[in-house]
Length: 376
Image (cartoon, rainbow, N blue to C red; front, side, top):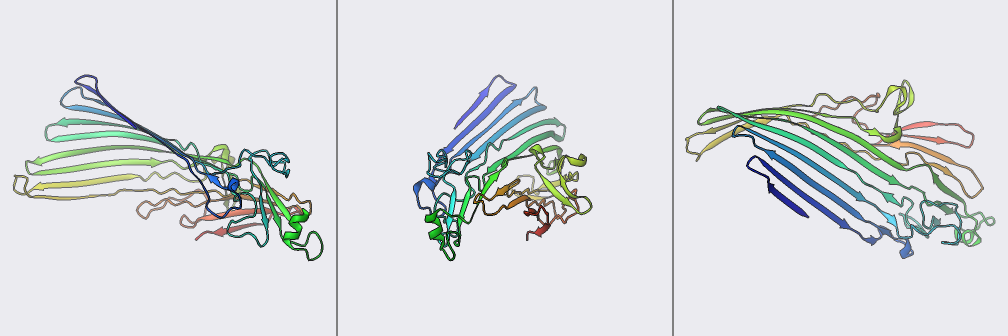
């Protein structure tokens, strides 16, 4: 961690701070049969804030701020550099990325993620770099009984993730493959799996959105005993967008709609109602500063964006040769914007407080049943 306060001259001052952190650990979040199947959890954080204060005279002050943060939080198997290609491990799945022993389940010796071989099915996981930067500029001006202040803010937010669900492959032994009535363990020693799954496709996802805001305020000394504070802020949070248009939704009139198609550059409508007024009052009852009555109110609007995706594009192929099964899960997400009980209307016609999941399954006959599932 470092910090600097530098006074260039009577009118210019520069301030800066930098925080860098690194963490690493190896452990398990469920039972594993081998230390190679445990997981590493390296975390890297970078955060810095810089500001420049310019004071041309006793009436004007300008303060420019810039902040930048980034964080990586990865969670991957210890054996990620060992391939299941017949050389690294004595089994050849044909998978070269990611590395590691495939998840092997032998009934009934698994449950709750405690597979017999390999780490959990959704490893490795990479969440990086998740950059966030923010510009702010504020100008203060003294004029008589007024202390004015106005400025703007611009922020860029980004979320990056890649989760390899079944990326290393999944092999199941459920019994009945070696001979009639064979147990899963007998099938395992005979090398006769019931089925297997391999993920294909790119799991990397990057969502971005921006915040733009401006404000103006006035601290007005009405009398030597009374100060009134008036303020107004407007803020706009842009809808989230996914890189490569890798988001889709379901519209009752149009069916499955992908971001970027039909002129839709995002799946959500923007919220342009971010007006935030405020009013404050301070009354020095005696004029000596011993008793002060304060009152105030404001309309502060807050937002909460939560989202996750489950196998954004996953095609599962059976590797046992006994059957073919594909399962393409489009997305699963939860999103809520809470703005003083006002929720902006989404571009498509489902209820804003009803997180929704859409899954599409392709059967061997190439039929495509679609169902919707409300997430409580």
